[in-house]
Amino acid sequence: MTYKLPNLLYKYSDLEPFFDTKTMEIHHKKHHQNYINNTNLILKKNNIKDIEINKLISNLNKLSIPSSQKKFLRNNAGGHANHSFFWKILKKNTQPNNIILNILKNEFSNLENFKKKFEEKALNFFGSGWIWLVKKKNILKIITTINQDNPLMDNDNKLINIPIIGLDLWEHAYYLKYQNQKNLYLKAFWNVLNWDKITQLLLNK
Image 1 (cartoon, rainbow, N blue to C red):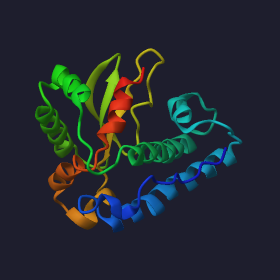
Image 2 (image 1 turned 30 degrees about the horizontal axis):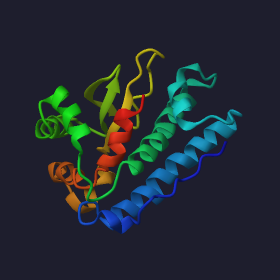
Image 3 (image 1 turned 135 degrees about the horizontal axis):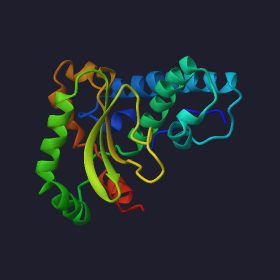
Image 4 (image 1 turned 90 degrees about the horizontal axis):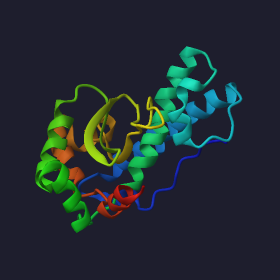
């Protein structure tokens, strides 16, 4: 299997003014494509074929490849998996329905408190990485991962962190528009989060 850059279900300009066109284009065409190119390079070098990306990143520790290549693969395959997930949960002008509101009420008291905790954890995160809402044994929690690590990595089969929401905290995701004002990027995110897709992910067993 040779991984390819996924097509987006929207134009780069469709998330304006919250996510700007130029950032979306560079983020997708340049950054994501680079992760794919590097992943394909390592897989070809080690004759690894026909493995779906989430299965690959979930089983990195089982691969029989040199440790230096494994770290390189972790970063780049993780980048491909993370961005492929990220593009799918973006869409402007959707609203959380009662299903989501009730689930978030059970876990975080209400939607606004969830957003507050999510933003606080993201702002307190130092360096490059991601922030996630994950489901683990039907319990929701907010976590962060460094670099291009993904919640599916380093889990045993019984206790998998399933990504529900993921937000890229690398500066390349927001710096053209928001510069050092990461707080504005975080608040903008809620305007382009596809709550319909989040509902599907929450209800998926």
